[in-house]
Length: 115
Image (tube, rainbow, N blue to C red; front, top):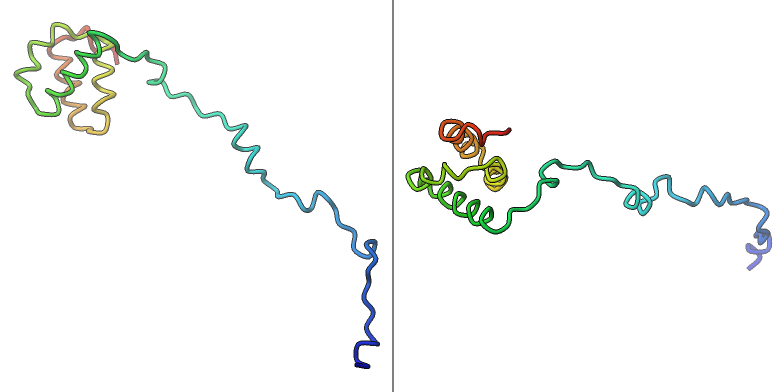
């Protein structure tokens, strides 16, 4: 028991000064989320197809996915730059099919190729 008599514990708060700013993290995660401004993506500025445009895009996409080029040929007279862009957006994950459709549009209806 005599071993404890020789030790002195400091209960004073002034012995170690704590800087309040040192307790804050260097990067505030919550403020990064609030101030984060994503880069605008151009295709999100194109209006969504509606009505006949939406029907055309869905039918053309279905024919493209199933490689029914013969069924797609009669649709070429109804191509517009708006419809071509939306078909390309739907097939953007398939690079080969996108290129084939792009080249097909150039040969069938060059005025629809606005890219």
